[in-house]
Image 1 (cartoon, one colour):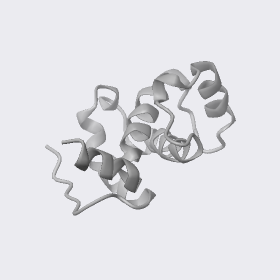
Image 2 (cartoon, rainbow, N blue to C red):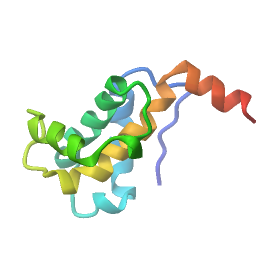
Image 3 (cartoon, helix red, strand yellow):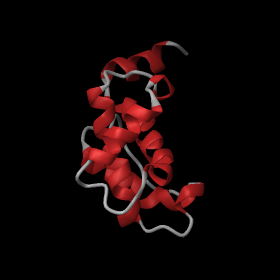
Image 4 (cartoon, rainbow, N blue to C red):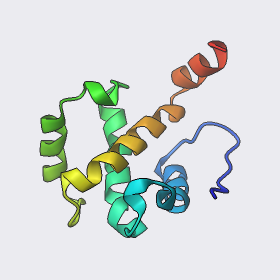
Length: 109
C-alpha cells in the first residue's frame, strides 16, 4: 500500500522520485524489478513532459520516443520495451506539477 502523502502539487523531481520509490512495486512492470532499474524511465518521463508542453502521451510517436530513449545517457540496461510503461506513468503523473492542469481539474468538477 502506498503511504505517500502530499499537500498540493508536486514541484520537482525529488517529490516524484519519492513517490515512485514507494509505488513502483504496485505496477505490473515493477514486479521483479528494483527501483534502481526503473528510476531512469521515471526520470525520463518526468523530463519528457516538460519538453512536450503537455502533449498527450499517446499522441507522441512511439518510434520517436524509442529514439529519444535510446539516446538517453542515463537509461542503463533498460530497453524501450521494458521502460515504456514507467515512462508513460511518470509522464502522466507530471501534469500535477502544472498549475493550469491543477486548476482545470479543480474547476471542471
